Image 1 (cartoon, helix red, strand yellow):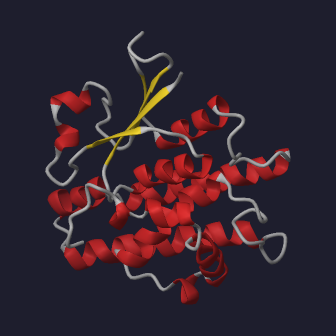
Image 2 (image 1 turned 180 degrees about the horizontal axis):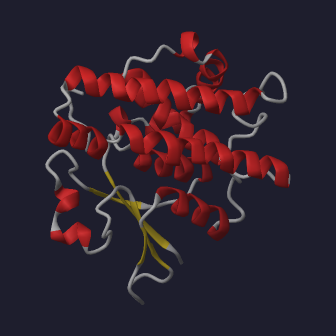
Length: 228
């Protein structure tokens, strides 16, 4: 029996991707909380399982206690693993190859083009190396969010009005990656979706009504501060 352990942090958008996917697929897993705020992810113990010191890490044990766990250290690789290892659970990739390609393109807009540019380490670097103040960091993150979410929206609407979600009416990996990034854009950087990306605003309204999305929100996690 496969045992999964998710190493994550309540406010990590990349960790949230995994929380949503695991909930949608109804896959049981254990959680190890890594205190990102106090830089636990940069300690020797965590670096031993994830040399990049990033969150999350998904540890996979095919038979409990029988072998060294496999550590999947990138969220998209972990999402793809869940698709392949649990074929009977709710699929997050469409059957049609063209739709699958679109989903993967949308995923890359989020994980390659947007998320790294407003990640904590990027903003930290802007401050430490280039003297950016808080307002400048916020503007940097805001501008990148608007630019890449606009690109995402254009891909979603290229063939006409979108369905309930990013690619038709089926929840996909694109949505799983989009959700926490929109939460960041709105809650941290002040992006007004209805103004900047109205089609995505409607899609997000549909997504945030899902119980799996609500339960995966950072505020609902056991390691979130009680007054958050």
